[in-house]
Image (cartoon, rainbow, N blue to C red; front, side, top):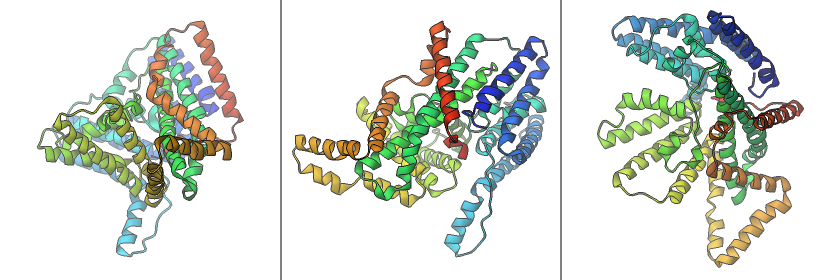
Length: 483
């Protein structure tokens, strides 16, 4: 079930909220966890009921291991067994065929590939449970009931694609006595509508042309390659941050606050700043459970650089089974190492140049993230950095150069292909919005006090989006659901 599916935001979400708050109003607080568990179960089994039992089994095993770790003093073997079991589960479903393919290529073997379906949300709930085991090993996790733990794992607003929640963040909220907070609920509704708008009207609009470009890369030229790459950069942001807004908004309708996951990442002035703004819960997880255990920055500079690189390499592999993701993670690792070495010089670039370098690096790296293969990514990058095209412009006087670019590339695209021209204009406008203006959370904060005209605006937007969704033949999945 998609967040942008009317069955979700017209049926499941409001009905669950009504039953949830009725239980609290009737002083049946013991019902709140079961109500959310039932809703989460319905949400997941609409995709594939068989994998729901895998999810329950994973939660049950980790709950038992966590309890054992809480009762015993630093059982390292048990922790390694628990973490290893989670990694093995994720590895089989996500990386088995990738491993076999590369073994066949290297060894000349002919081992058969298997038709493995990747369980929805497995990358996210596996990371959450690994963090729980490590915290239990350190006696940082307080005991809870089995139902509360299962809800921590399968809570439907964040189950599929995060935010990656922490045990200590969620369990106290499940246990807390709640009263109706209309301001929080209004904020949740506002965030949900903002997220729905970003997904349906922005991300899905960009997706059509981006998919066409990446599906016919041989036909791309210099401007087309750059527009396609920036188009995907924006599509991924609006898609994933739209999902995060809807997830956080859904949680607020139950008085449960999920952690923020985005904070205007394309306004970042360095690669470190970018990862403080993009997929923030993943960044925090990698820092706490990979980077710091490797030694973090409390070691020699050379070792710190190795730790940085390995952390981002693992982050890249987590995203998907393919060399494109390995390269993407490696590129961010190299960029982080360069940034760490640069900061040691004490020299600072001006703000615009810092932003320009950071954004262009992130945009170029996303090409590997989106491309179907390393070869396709290299073709697109070759067209983006077409030396012959650039060289042909260098020998022209500046005014003529500007006229030629505008006339042959921009105006030519507008006249020869109105769809492409509209896409170029759309990308330019959306990029300016991302870089120059507030993000959806900051805009949502302005809607905290529900004056009548804001209510009319919100519900008007909601109804327009609903009509747009109903009229669409099919719904596009969120991009991060595949991870």
